[in-house]
Every structure is written in structure tokens, then in C-alpha cells.
Length: 152
Image 1 (cartoon, rainbow, N blue to C red):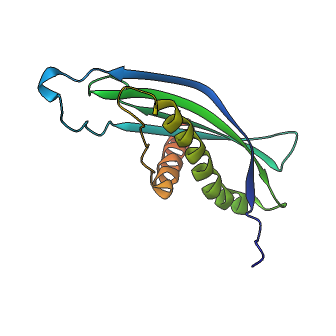
Image 2 (cartoon, one colour):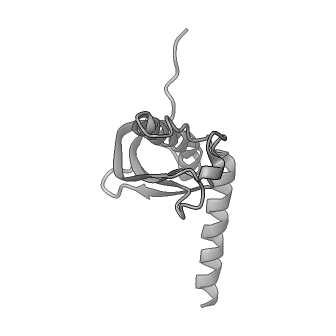
């Protein structure tokens, strides 16, 4: 079976920063399953001015940043340089980003999994987010920001 190319492909994955900490388990919680940490995700899309076929996506994922729960506390910031495999209008480029973000998320997830593999609590497998919901929230925040600028 011949494989059709995806409309976007990752060219480079870079971890820009990472912080990992092990929050101790209290004595009364010894032997119990660790609680799921609260996870915060944000991303930005930066279009390359010098090459319209390139897009950079920056992803920031954090969990248990206030160190309120036993287990891992971490933040990872990574970026992916993506290339559109063909010239396309802006609305098609946005659809292609629905492929880019999961690719970048899985790359960061794999990095974190390898990093925690030797950690005190063992490997941490970051749960996959709902990409549609992330995009919808990002659009809503951008629209709210635009509305505020219009009234200021």
C-alpha cells in the first residue's frame, strides 16, 4: 500500500527547558497509589517569516508545580520545527496544526518518560490531552484578548 504524506512533518525537536522534582510521600500515604497530578498545558504557534512553509510550535507542560501532592513535580518546555509538505491556504495550515501538536506532545512525553524512568517513582506516562479541546480553549483566550484590545 502506498503511503500518502501528511500535510505537515516535524523537522526538529528541541527541549528548551526541563525541571523535575520528586515530592516525598508522607508517612500516612506510604504504600498507596500516587494521586494523579494536576496538569497544565499551553502552546504557541510561531510562523517563520523567512520561509512560509515552516512553523515553530512551542509546548509547555507542567504538573504538580505547587508540589501539593506526592510524586513528581515537573515542567518541560519543548519546541518543534514543522514543515508544510505543500503550499496551502491559511485555513488548511490551521487544520495541519492538529497533526503537529500531537507529534510535539508525544515527543515531549517520550522525553519525560525516559527522564523519569530512573526516578524514585518510576516512569511517568503523561496522559494524552484532548487536542480539539486545547485548540478550542486557545482560540477562546485569543478571541477574549482581541476583544479586550478592541475596547481599551
